[in-house]
Image (cartoon, rainbow, N blue to C red; front, side, top):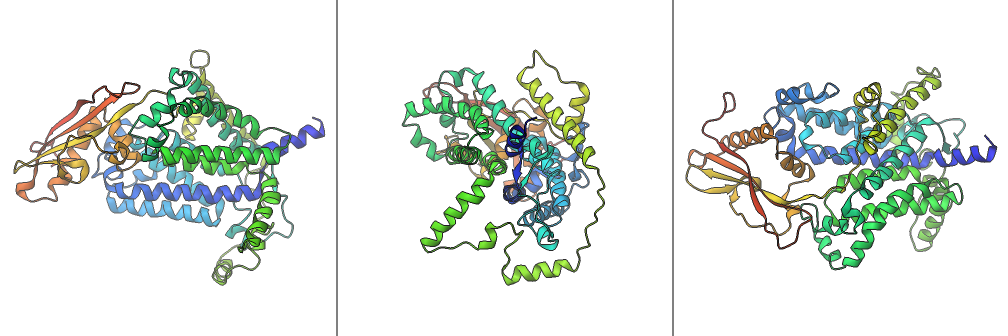
Length: 515
């Protein structure tokens, strides 16, 4: 291969170590956000006292499921595991024992996802575990980390890292956008210019800001074509060999702007957080060596300031805060010298990465061409064991719109709304349906009750048990109904919402062991 082509390949498929550190911090924050967002539902979603006891999971789970959360079922045990999950994310954030921490983050992430598949968020959860998986093969702690401060190198590594691992994680990010774009173009609502309007009209996702943009139908029609086009051509710009620094930076900023706009208008924040973290990997050396110093100079001229050491190749600022210096000194007392012996040879690591990435490509090829290609069984098995399965159909299909009412009848005759902590029952449409759901996982869970009688029954039993254990005799729950009030999209605004009874549960005659 000619030298110029090889240098282009290194530049396009390499990752600046500063960008890698930036990504490490961002993905650790995403993991922490994921843990903290799940804490309020620790008992209901993840303990044996909740809607899906482990026995139920074992009866439905795949042989490929792997979960440390299967080890115990009490709320206290779950709280301890949540704490360990969060601590591994904090370790990754600080860059302390980074390779171990990114492995633990990956292990805890796939574990919490396998513990309750009813609250999985599809693309968002898949993207997070994929980024953590590929991150295990990357030196995430080379810059701006406690690892780098505790073990300073005599000679600095070159700022650009290029190997099969950098290629795999960058191409994985590109696959997400290309697959999403291809599947959107295959659907009628994206080809006829109405998709964005339908998404913003769908109140299970739409935030209040969406109402503002609905006033501009011509803009929404244009965006319906622009979004999938940018998802397709954006990756092309990311790998353009000419003007790479400026072009790649502008493309990254364009994608971040797109995800920020999604965040403002629709209630799928978690996917936007993961996507923005992934985009940081593409920030080129030009961003750090040219744009950041210029921005710093401008900031200094306007009265601000950024520590010089933060922008240099030093792992941490040379003159850090006294607390940080004291922490590093204390940690050095427990740090063993690094061994120079490599446990896994580089060629074997490269072979493993190549094997896994081939499985990823095969998996996506089957998704995009199901009638023409079937992935080999061995590839599917490898992908499944490593939790590399993925499907990128964000807002591809027409979506149902509506809200849920869980109507409870008490022994004293009162009727309460159990989804709203026992407030007086109302069948009126919420002012903003997206705010009716506690969070994204609750929305996923409730809609998955449709067509899943077992899950609906377990949820009804949980509601009966949890309510009656905390209320006096005259306020005991006698029966409940789980009702979906909805209409499909796309449909005219004048089409009425209809009630769909999902479950009718008598709380006075629960199955044995469920009282």
